[in-house]
Image 1 (cartoon, rainbow, N blue to C red):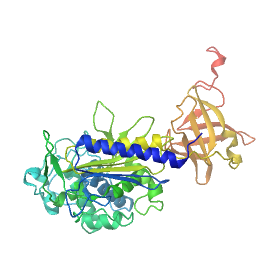
Image 2 (tube, helix red, strand yellow):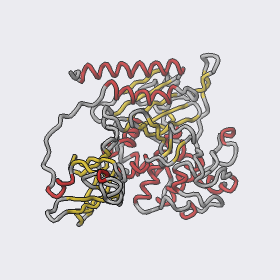
Image 3 (cartoon, rainbow, N blue to C red):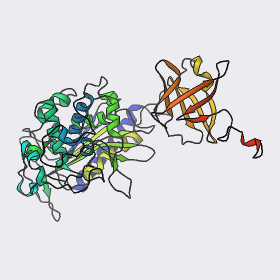
Image 4 (cartoon, one colour):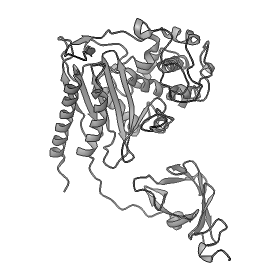
Length: 469
């Protein structure tokens, strides 16, 4: 028997709060702010600790630095420009910016941290706390190293995203902060997300490793490096943003910020972060954190002096609520519990408060032209099953794991017997249907491989015929 939503939700939120309080206590985080966002519930929020400012006590509206979560916003701005024809991901940055060096780096390479740029701008920025301005980021590129060849491997680079921010500003004709506010923050109503620290900003601390003392960290602006890590926000705004990265079709159904297909493109793995342990990767500006059972957490972590943050959305799994996103923001620069908690809470939400199970309902009959495609087929000696669900022809290998998504086909316009694979196995390839004199589908070719009703060798002869026939 499914428990009532009320008691189940109460039980779940009690676990969420305990996890948050445990992370704050064990991580010794001066101030912690957490929000879980999902489509079928009001947001759950929790704050623990002290903001460090007596005039602005800690609450859900307290602002924290989100560090490199900023990169996900810059990446979306780049993809918006690509979708509008203002740039090409595979073109070098020199096609859009006047740079004294490293102009052959592609936009795609910078987005995926595979362009080989050194991590930081020229100079000891973290000693001087004086980053270059926007013009200086580009002017000093000839003093920055290309530490790896273009496309060789993953190498995280704040400098690379600083350049992408200047690219967006150039093709749009405004500052990065202006474009960000106009193109993302206002459409999604992320009103608590700003480039500058507001009055109710938390104080960021370095907590002493050997005592319970803590020292406020200096607060400074990143100047021309702002597109990599400048923003301030609340856990509520960042949980909404994380939900957008996981389920844009729910958070932004009209595609006002970005088409869902483009966000899907951003989530596709472009590189692993470790060549031997394939436990994490990067898409286009997004960290990809695989979980068990084909579940993916997508988002980004952030760090600035005195602050750590994490914002991730959860995709996949039968028990994942729609548009599930979580943000954890903390005022400590060293507590790894902050970054771990976001993944723990996403998992708890799916385990303790899964979405309601929708009852199965009958659907309209299968279109007559595709009824003879249904059932078992054979290709390369192996069995496949073709079926009709969700108003589309689908296919699966007969022995495929139950949690592996099927291939889904859509007819090519004006060619009803030619279908395009739009997702799943062989995505992008054509499925061609061949009919007999009665109009029944007698043979199919998918990605040029022959599919027949019986098992056949590549010469078209059934194996039961034996080697001599």
